Image (cartoon, rainbow, N blue to C red; front, side, top):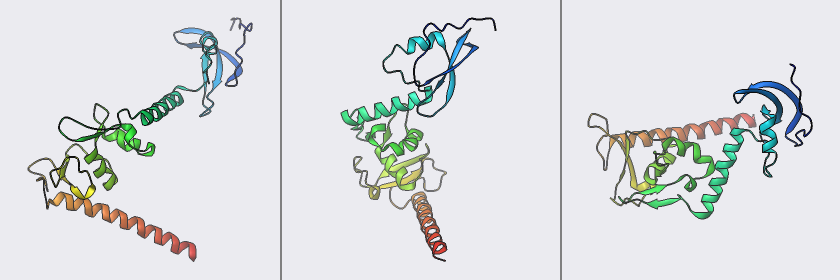
Length: 205
């Protein structure tokens, strides 16, 4: 290779492996060291000139970009949960809005699929999605049967579809689409119960 490795100040960190090579990275050809992420174990090559600068930081861990993003989101989640930032509020039209810290961490994937550009989900849509066990699509609307926009109890919510040519497209009581969705949910519940009974029966024989 013909290039001299500068060992006057070798990287000294648990995440840095004593493996070096010359590689094209960051638009230049330079010596790189192998760094192992302490959280996921992924190994990648890091240019020595940049690595020495990173090692001057007291909080350098050697984590990969993906783990860094996850830890940053988790840190923001915990901070926002403590301070109440973007948790639950009433907007100008009287609907309750939920931020990502208003839901449990394990529910965030579902929340992300339903959030709007502002990063919020209306509470009445969120409660119906949890009740159905799936995300709502844009054509599905939620009706407050008593007219109170802040009463988001599932017993007060009814789902219908937008569009005059759709089944159950009218809001209010007795919509066909709502009955259909509730029946599908009940079928799924019964299927889960039946599977559990079959599993218990198989384990006892």
